[in-house]
Image (cartoon, rainbow, N blue to C red; front, side):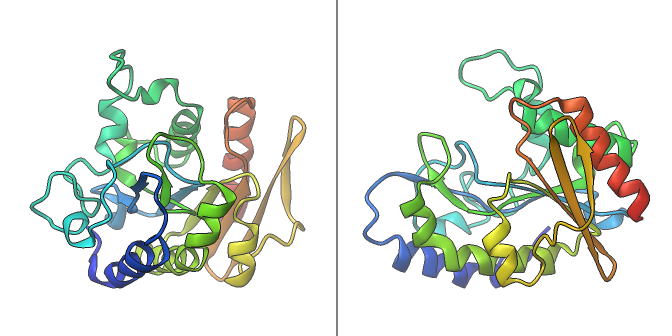
Length: 235
């Protein structure tokens, strides 16, 4: 579990101040941590761009951080288990992770590194931007601008709190500006080539940063193998 207090003031500034006059409904995301993440090595953190639908529109930080609220964003009961629970769901009311290229690639990478049937319990997941449109889709350039500074602070806190050994950005270059300010930018010196893509990586002290693409529309097996190769040669 994550101690939410370090995060709370940043979310409060984000929702109460920076998004105060933003009238479109949004969804607010908080990092998700598998129940065995902290007891395992290597610890893998996957980072996406933003959520495509999440907790319903609620900008009250006290509600979102209230551990008795079933619609809270922090330390939810299902954490990463929902990924497995929704695999193969066919109901129109449920998100089917088996149909998601994003989660198929994450599963493939994780199983190739941590060979556990309950693979989802061993990883953590976050996003570059914690605020996204409630109806789905990535945040607009305007919404990104409103949350940019807070997003950098929250990403820095994610890396500090979760202390991953491997950070995998499936973000298609969206990470560049944020990481440049954090001095962990992609220097494009080391990469693994697959199909028409290049997945870059950089080792800083004891952490491996992998800069790759959102998996949608790309060869998933080649993508998984490229990331696996990077991990194998970098560990």
